[in-house]
Image 1 (cartoon, helix red, strand yellow):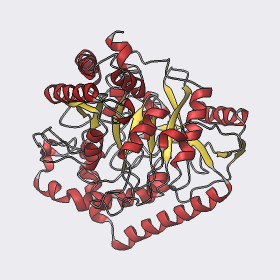
Image 2 (cartoon, one colour):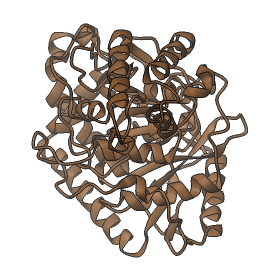
Image 3 (cartoon, helix red, strand yellow):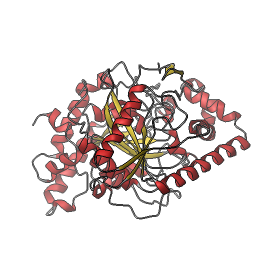
Image 4 (cartoon, helix red, strand yellow):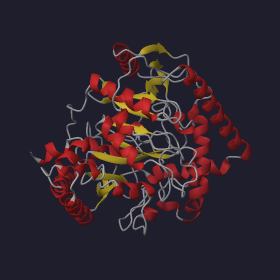
Length: 481
């Protein structure tokens, strides 16, 4: 088995090979590092590669496997290479947050997410490219070249977890951590043909990363993988209450991998192509309708949703986001303006203008959305909708028109017209996944967004796994892989 075959294998299959002693963790890690060396000059998925640390961790994993009498007792990702988005603190390993101010910052501790990745036995091979503080729907910054999409290097992989997406899509690793404060797991998965899930707010604790307490209204970590099962495995490993994040959920962690079966027969599924407010590319709209028919063929009860978001959630999401940006990074605008990206500066300037009443009004709209979705999920088990209104577009050149209508952009450059749908479930806290549902006429991936009720990741995973089985996508790989 060559390096490409090894690294395009799902993470759970890689673990099987390691615990069965058919392949060592060292072999997997060397394959990953060789793939990074061969491909990353084209993609710029990584900001930092940890050759020494990865090899040491692989040796420790192989030692643990050799000493084990029962493979079932080994950690769920033992010996498997993983990439970490560079918004997570990594002890002893450079963490830039995508910002020139922190270009040489080496933390003295891990974030909770990284602690749990290590506990799960995964081997960290490096830190992935991210826009500054996760503030862009594309992945470009002053500390690394812009990240490219493995399906077409002239186009964006999305953001802010663009490097994570590129690292998995190109087969440099099989699994990665992302963060999602406005769509930053789901959008790159849509743009690069991966599966990723943003769990219910609080499911995965946020401490020691860019998601400080003031951003816990919207931001959470989440897995990015080729398969639904791999995401379920990583999400289970990352989930569970931690006292360092008082907003983390105290309920028991479900056995997410066990819910990747069971099918959707009898499930109440609703779909919408526009949420009552957004313009959508016709190919995206058709993909949603076609996907709904797949669910119907699998035995689900499917109907078009009578759902309208008014006002559009991105409007009040942006108020909350910019207010939080000002609170966290306003001092950098005053002290290190020249080192910051224009989108960060624009968000801080907007944040400085927000009044207490305006911020409170945005939170009121968010509560209204949660009430609306709570009522909605009394009658429905799952919502299907677009992940984005368009497929991947050229770097820093989002479409000016979508579905024949002018496409909105914020003063910070967020292309609302292209990505109008994901923010709703950050501000609304619902679990939401993006799953590949096909390709457009130019061969670029299309993602379908699956949304569940609060604390019901299980339904999202079960539906995702059924759709994955009915419409398998992993055999089709991007040109750069």
